Image (cartoon, helix red, strand yellow):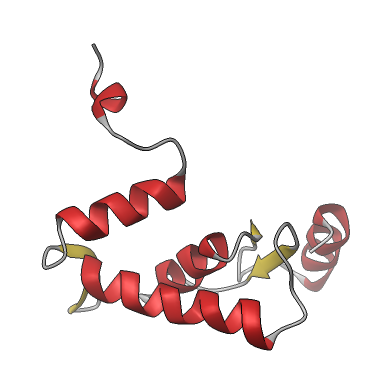
Length: 109
């Protein structure tokens, strides 16, 4: 039996919820000397998810473009969007205007 079949999850959002329950005080992400625990990630991504669902025009299944560098805000926004049922389109912040326009048009974000 492989390791992944032992996990009681089938989606990335279920994996996040499982990890947050199992390891609340463990570090989830560290960047530039700051650490985000699984508990903090769960709380902050839940708040962002709630904002998206209740204070934006987005609905489950919509695409959302994320144009963020590698900061602690990225996993919060990424998991929050997934928790809201959105499809995340990652965009490289170093894209040129032409590349950005192409990716947005191509993805429907």
